[in-house]
Image 1: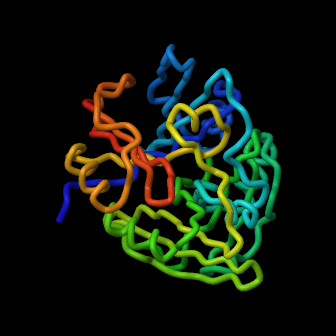
Image 2: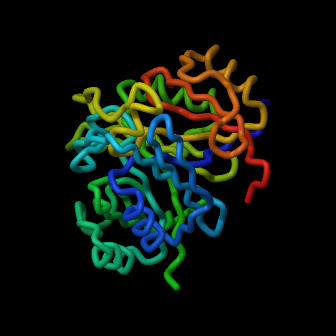
Length: 141
Length: 141
């Protein structure tokens, strides 16, 4: 009924774009697709991409400040706006441990989800952004 | 080197989950995949999915409040946390007009992106969340 459209990426605003690029590449097998600097805003952007073409954008301005983050999943859900991203992973416990070794902090340790039969966990990335991990759903699309 | 992993969804915390479900389904051809209510948090969730299996999660708590939103792309980029999502669309101008007719507000009218050769626009969804639209990149992966 309409022209093709699909979610291309989510944009995460960070304090230290170099450190966060390294972290997301190590954590989730992204690589840098392109970099950009918009001088008038002192805005640096790096677009990350994974092996399937999925993109994830990091943005940094020199005058950044805290703001768009919830401390826990429950607090985030009560605060309007984009609150977390979720990665589906084959081995939840190993991935959770690997992210902690890379500098993430556990927010919700691996456990069965109350929602839909998957197992889930939440971590903070090194800057405190909520990242959910889930196992593939039993009847995935 | 590691187990398979991919971005599954972004979670958007909303004030009116029924209205926002209708809006995202109308705007971006999502359908509801499943619904869930976690009584202990009075948390309602609807998972949306598009024809390709890409998911987009809406969450609502009864005691929600404003918080995780930037007013403009430049302001969002200076505020640490998840700031926007971006949809790639075949017809940028028509999609932009269609979203405005559905109740979005234009933040950045369609124009060439300074970044990478695409054209882009930003709108606020009906609750004020930043949604970017871009045309396919010239050398898409």
